Image 1 (cartoon, one colour):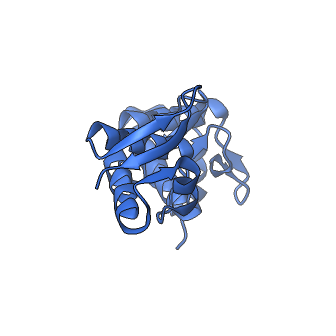
Image 2 (cartoon, helix red, strand yellow):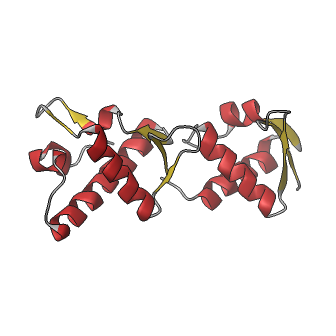
Length: 165
């Protein structure tokens, strides 16, 4: 599978378009590119300085400000969430938080004991996203549904999770 679409190699993609209808199509194309890139690369977050915004084949790149515009557009369409840890990073939602939470729950039911450490989840969960912040959001979603209890350390980092089967 290749994440590169024809739009990625189209030079006007690297300049935010001034006409609203054209810019909307440009944002939709960037969303498609970024979602495919993240699935292909098995990553859950992007910085405004990520290499996906640079195309050496055509010698073009989005500026950091324009990359932020693209990622903010994705946040508006609920395909990205601004990171709480870094203002220049966005969590990319190739799957919804409830869907990721469901994958974690299924993994726990099939392979885990009822209590696991956060590092066990990060290293063992059998799905393509390994982003800690994204998995944290999914675990808190499970907690809100009463399917898990998230255990925090003294500085509010997730230490472990107790699943309720």
